[in-house]
Image 1 (cartoon, rainbow, N blue to C red):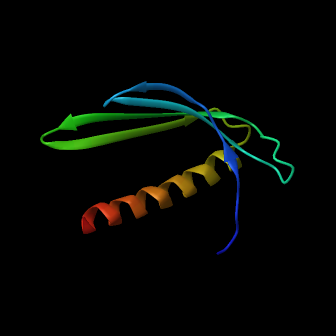
Image 2: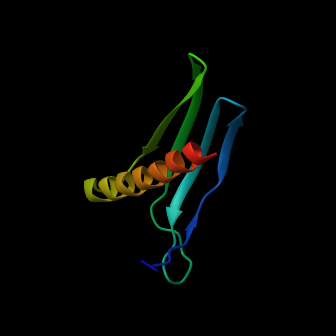
Length: 86
């Protein structure tokens, strides 16, 4: 929709190829980060395929949590579409 956002974060842990941990925070118009969450992504082989498990916490409100869930699910849907084409 043309809406632009900025975010910041720090990679805290990389355990290739199984685990990634990073922080996430939206930035306001002045570039100041808001509430920080921690994102953990794990990858595991299952019957010749890769299972990705995603976890993000802790949220200030349930609305914020739900908003992030919608955004991440949209991103994962686009990733799945991309992988089907390649």
